[in-house]
Amino acid sequence: MSTNEKLSGGGRTGRDWTKHIIILAILALELLPFYMMMQISVKDNAGFLQNTWLPSAPSTWVWQNYVFAFQIIFPYVANTVVVAVTATAVGLLFALLGSYFFARYQMPYSGFFWYAFLLLMLMPGVANIVPLFALLKSLSLLNTLWALIILGIAGSQVFAIYVLRNFIEDIPKDLFEAAEIDGATHFQQLINVVIPLSGPIIGTLAILMFLGSWNDFLMPLIVLRDPELFTIGVGLIYLDGEYVKQWGQIMAAFFVASLPLIIIFLFCMKLFVRGLSSGAVKG
Amino acid sequence: MVTKVYGRKALLEWKLYLFLIPSLLMVGVFSYFPTVSAVYHSFFRWSGGDAKEFVGFDNFRDVLGDQVFWSSFVVIAILVVANLFKMIPSILIAVLIHRLKSDRWQYWYRVLLVVPMIVPGLVTLFIWKFFFDPNFGLLNAALDTLGIKTLLVHLDQLCGWNVFHAGMPISWLGEPSLIVPALILWGFPWIGAVGVLIFLAGLQSIGSEIYEAAELDGVTAFQKFLHIEFPLLMTQIRLNLVLMVIGTLQGFGLMLLLLGDNGGPGGRGMVPGLWMFNRAFTAGEFGYACALGLVLFVFILALTLINNKFVRVDK
Image 1 (cartoon, rainbow over the protein chains, first blue to last red):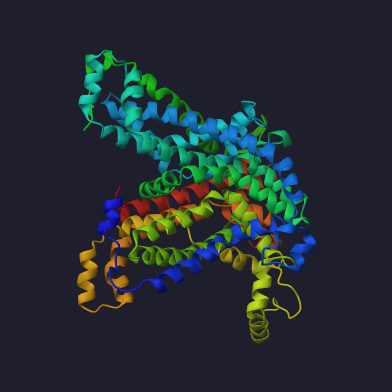
Image 2: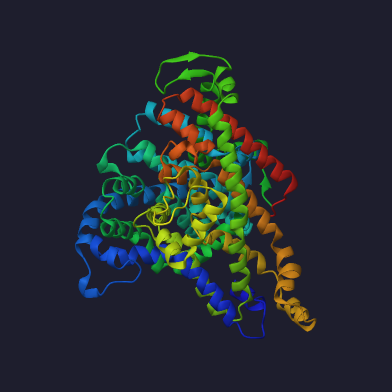
């Protein structure tokens, strides 16, 4: 990718400062919500009304906002982590197994199954919500985190299998044959040949699946009733309804809710940016 | 390519089918079954429980006469057109980043673009709800400071909208005629990180020699965009367009959280998906909601098929 960038990149001559100014201006507007969240999160309402736009002096920061936010949000974050991590891990495992089936051999009926998967990419999910609710009800999965985990796994299969199949097909056949001569079963081939070779693509898919699970609020809103089970999605909706007046506390809560993703982002920024780029290309 | 396997060999490799079972089961139970169930239940009067009553095509007849449903399509049509224009800033910023000389700056701008994505979508949504707040909100504060408010008040007096008044805060989500404008304004400056990254990927295929040739000919910046970048971006723009139209037609989370399940004051923010949600979970008319969902489904599917026919999205 980096060689590509070296070759392209238009406008090799001339100065770029006007472009920098326009880009920075647009980015500043785009990041404004983020900035406002951070600076309001350490103000109380009086401080916020006096001084809306600028950060306040560090000596006046109201840390109680964060004490409050942690108490309220932490259980929600814990629930969301459980759901997102489990859904991503199991979803990836299932997708790897499924894509291995499609990529290794063309078995009888595999074409039929493939189109059954592809058809789902065309189908809009909006009509499913109502019967899905009834289905979860009859499986007594309503008001459980299991429902969200299972829906996360099911929802990610098609895209993940689509991407992984193309990737596994590009692995040289010799590697599989060599493993087979050594007596490796298909599952061992998956573990020892496919997984070591597809680290980046698995990482990318993991990030996309994790983000999808993390950002979901519609299903949690429909499924969860117990406040102890709330994920960030529902938790924030109730918080927004309940504590309308204390903007500082609300913003601190928003920041705490973003914290896990920010930490992940700091650790694997490259994978994030590249993953979103390639995920974007595949659409 | 993939080796084909027939007969005896296939029987020997039967264990491979086990690999497919988990995914197939998941997709079958939680994607295919609900779709079939939606078709089935759209012929019933059903409130989500065991009791249901067969009503034939009554639900669909009701959908045809459903004023709220069809007027919600007007809102969606306006939003689709607005979203079309909202793609412009993303294209602009992608082209600008691409034209930068420094690869390192290109990388850092890309990182900055992705930063809004690590804030959960819900948080962004609530921060925007706070921006719209009539008394504390930043939008009104900004409009006051920049003098746009005065302009709007004058325009109001000229055109007789009776919406903007001097000395009164603008109630973005409380005034029926301002709801659609607020939904359009939402997310300003409308940079979609994924969209920009798609455009940047498309621009990468432009070699520097093309730019050099253009510069020798004394081409202006805008002509460069028109003749070099725009044609190459067409595939990506079409792909984005397809995703945007389908996403807009399906989407109702924004309206649900900003306005509630009634679509806000006067129901002016009602969109088809929200009406389906409202019928199911507020009115308890699950059968009717299934019928609404199916009609919407047919619309989106038709659009998708038309798209696939006319717009070939290359892998």
